[in-house]
Structures are given as structure tokens and as C-alpha cells.
Amino acid sequence: MKQGKILIIDDNEDVLFALNLLLEPYVEQIRVTTQPERIEHFMESYVPDVILLDMNFRRDAISGQEGFFWLEKIKKADPDAVVLFITAYADTEKAVRAIKAGATDFIPKPWEKEKLLATLSAALKLRESRTEVRSLKRQVAALESSDEEGFEIIGESNAMQEIFATIEKLRHTDANILILGENGTGKDLVARALYHHSPRNGQVFVGIDLGSIPESLFESELFGYEKGAFTDARRDKPGRMEVATGGTLFLDEIGNLSMPMQAKLLTAIEKQQITRLGATRPVSIDVRLISATNMNIRAMVEEGTFRQDLLYRINHRTAYSSSSGAWE
Image (cartoon, rainbow, N blue to C red):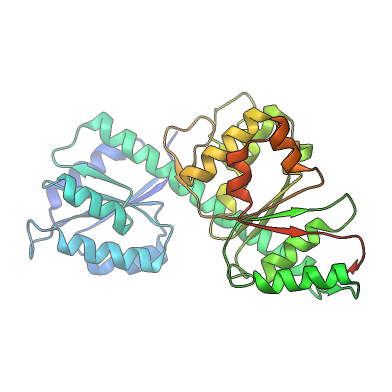
């Protein structure tokens, strides 16, 4: 089945003709141009899913400077744009620089048909994933803004004043925080207060109750999955860590995680990347973690039921939630 909208930009009309002929059976729509100056026009009127961009135009045939110039323009217009460089002068140095600048991959000239189609298919999947993540973030942001209008903490007890002081002390830090407290003491509200008084306030806030997730669904919920990864995976779905990238992820009831689940979470935190179920490429993440539990997690470490290295990763600072106050 044909899928996706492609924009191809190359100064060589023969290359444009050949790529158009090759991709037409596999792609829904194709637009081509020899004029990179028209990129902005196509991005606004056509909205391509993937852009194939020549790295070297006539004015500069080897260095790739023009390609990088237009890549910067594209990423400025759409930070989620998926760009594949086309070049006859591919080398490791340019490849590394291109990826750092925001390109997704290279297509060398002359190309191998199967490799080109595989690269394009992966690029289309990436675009679909980025679009879905952006949509989910908008939905989460809308829910957060409606849920938290008038969000305010009220409490006069010494315990509550200590919480206020801790929140104020942590307002300028991006450190991961562990909240300890019994059931019903408002740990989730402490988490939201920490988020609202943090450098990531205004970015997405995503919560997940780890105590309610079966072990069999842990990876699909936290890391996401690709279409076809299992029987009911009818479409790609980003996990909570991917959706929370750039913002804050609240891991409630973290003390309920089994040892295998703890190991998987630790790997994601240490590497700052996740791999969706069924995927071959990892996805980089950037999240600030706020975790909470009603368990004596340090005693669990002593007993060998909670990993010391995971506790270290989630517990740069500790906050205590008390029942001696009210939350609104």
C-alpha cells in the first residue's frame, strides 16, 4: 500500500526523474524541485512527511555547505521534519555532522534500490511517530491546563511548612526526586507542585501508576511499540517516556516494580534512550523523573528487593509527603 508524501530537492533533473520513477509505486504523493529556495513554499502548501535533500548544489559541489544551510532552514520551520541527505560524496565526517544537525540518514548516489526503499520506509515511520508524539503532548498539555487551573497547596502544620520549604529549595534544580509517604498523603500533588516550581514548568507532565501495570505490559506502556510488534499492535504507539521527553515523568508507586522491571527502567535512565517493542533503533529521551512510593524503599534495598543503583538514579533528592495538611 502506498504511503507518505515526499519532497525531493536536487539540482540534477535526471536524478529527480529517476527517483520519481522509482518511488512512484510506493509513495502516495511526490513533489520535486531543483530550487531549494522553494522549500518553505512546499512545507507550507504540501507539508511533506519526508524530505530528500541534495547535499551539494551547483554553487558548491563538494563541501555540502548548501545542504547544511537548507537543512537548518527546514528544521527551523519544522523541528520534527524528517530529512534524508542525497549525496555522491558521503563520508563518515559529513554523516556525523549531518546527524548532529538534524538529518535522519544518508542516501548515497548511485543508490541501491532495496536499501533506498528501506531507508525511506524507516523515515516515514519516524515521521508518523513524531507526529503522534506531538499530538499526544498537545492532548496532555490541554488536560493539564484544564485540570490545574487554580492549583494551590494549603497547609499550616510544621510538616506542611517543611514540604513548602523543600519545594522552594528545589525549584531551580532539574534533579530527579523521590517522594516518600503513606497512602493518602498527597504524593501525586507534591509531584505536581514540584513540577510547577521547576525549570520544566510549561513542558509536558506525564504520570504513570507503576503499581497498576502488569509486568507483561510494562515495556509497551513505558517504552511504546511498533506496528506488528505483537498481535494487537495495529499501529505505532510511543511510550510514556518518549511522550514525556523535554518534560517531567511521574513514576507513582515505583516500589511495586519487580526486579526485572527495575532492570529495564534502570537501563533506560542510564542510557537516556528507549527502544520500542518491535523496533531496531533506539529513541533518545530527556526526562526529569519524579518518583513516589509508600514503601520503605531503603529497607527494600537492604532486603534485596529493590536495586541500589536504581535508587541512586531516582533519588538525587528526597521529599516527604505528610498527612498533616490539606491540598487543593
